[in-house]
Amino acid sequence: MNLSEEKITVEEPVEDYYKRYLGGRGFISAALLQEMPGGVDPLGPENKLIFALGPITGMPIPGSGRNSVGAKSPLTGGFGEAEAGGFFGAELKKAGFDAIIMEGIAKSPLYLWIKDGKAELRDARHLWGQETRETQQKIRTELQDPLIRTAIIGPGGENLVRFACILNDLTHAAGRTGLGAVMGSKKLKAIAVRGKTVPPMADEKVVRNLTRWMAQNFKKETGFWKAGTGQAMEAFNLSGVMPVLNFKDGYFDAVKKITAQTVLEQFGIGMEGCYACPVRCKKKVRIDDPTCSVDSTYGGPEYETLAAFGSNCGIDDAKAICKAHEICNRQGVDTISAGVTLSFAMECFENGLLTPKDTDGIELRFGNAGAMLQMLGRMIRREGLGALLAEGTRIAARQIGRGAIDLAMQVKGLEIPMHDPRSKQGMALHYSVHPAGADHCTGVHDPVVEKGPGFEDWGTIDVNESIPTTELSPRKTRMVFQVGLWSQLPNYLGFCLFVPFKKKQLQEASEAITGWPMSYWRLMKTVERGLTLAKIFNLREGFTKAEDDLPKRMATSQTNGNLKGVIVDPQKLAEAQELYYQMLGWDQEGVPTRGRLVELGIEWAYRCLKG
Image (cartoon, rainbow, N blue to C red; front, top):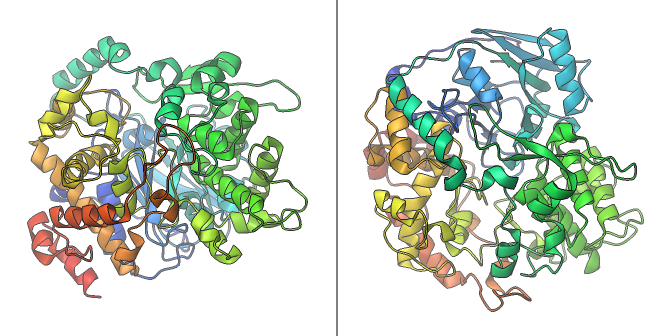
């Protein structure tokens, strides 16, 4: 779809294309490398914005409500990709499409309307500047259908905040890497979709049986249905997983005030879910306090949001955190990057790198909830210091100077999620080498492969050893390689990480839906193929081994808590990276070898390494 020319074309890839890349991140990594030259401006007309579904997306099975979005990231300058749940992806599949690829920049704001196999661009000038809820309401009224599903940007995307997100159905964010800013740069306000046809499956009986099993067993297989993510915050606090004061500390005294349970007990009005899913893991909150009201339309904060605006900013005010979440969904920005950028600014302020003159008198200190909310709004509107902070921590730190970069908790420009890599050293390795930067959803959460409930399921992919979470060793590197490939598979299938199917069941679902043999080897090779293409994308953009790194803070200890004294040792990290490269068939500089590209069936990508 060329927005500059307002021209829509429809392509039908051959079956082998689907078999090779499956969907989601696989489609995105291949298309960005094949269809876009290197060196383009992430906010310019040549960048491509891709919405991609997987083979499971939209099928009548729990966990099928996911879709991927990708582009060259305005936050990192490299491979950018994120996922979102809800109903939008499923509706797009039922409307007859597996992917949307957009290029160019519209002359004036537009939105894309897709219904039952037909697509058209419509005027969105009356929607530009609107918040996400108003935008969705006006589109549904205009198209006379209250069941239309949407993917929308808010003012954050329009203002090109480099960590702007795209909202599915107002509560499900494709949050990471700034894809909302790419959509805003193209003057595309929204995509509206209505579809009525579920594609046929190869074996409906298998899918029905798996769906029935999940409906009967999800409550004993997962606890997310109780209060969503954030239920383990007290345990995270004890173990040092949850970051405190911009990743300086490892223990937050007031954690009980901001847990998921507390938020749900005080402000919750129920739980919501995604397409075809019984788990219903999304909190919905409402606060009627006139000094801090929160609209339930925008759902409620999950763990990443609770910690990013809470412990990491030193804030124990659950109302303020819920308000920050609402603002982010209302305006369309990523809660993780927004929260970490604010904690960075707070530490800069406390260290004298920013002054009251810079902040227009706002006392931007840890624990100041009012200042946090004020500066969040300024970032979204790009007012004063907010204009600089809207660039993300890496760009802001470089401009502030005087050592501010050491306070920027980011990898490749992407702010670190709420899982301190000192506590999960497999995740530390993953954060450092992952092409998109610090991404917890595709990483290895070390505790899940410790002996305990569900441990035996990892033996399916030859992971049989329980390894301490804070160990960084050759055997941990092997675990990151094996578990990491499997952990990224849902982003290719269009499947949710939180739906507790066993690995064998996910394989069976993939086969039953597609009709293709799906061995574990084949599924993981598909992920390796996409990972390698994303790596080559970054190399073409000028990335080197030097970008595979962590902030210096991770080589120092947390100042308090049970993890005090534990660091990510730089030498051990370098050794683990070298081993990881070798396992993927990359050379010592992290460049994929021609032999591995041939083995993966993507020899065409070799020319991208040769310029």
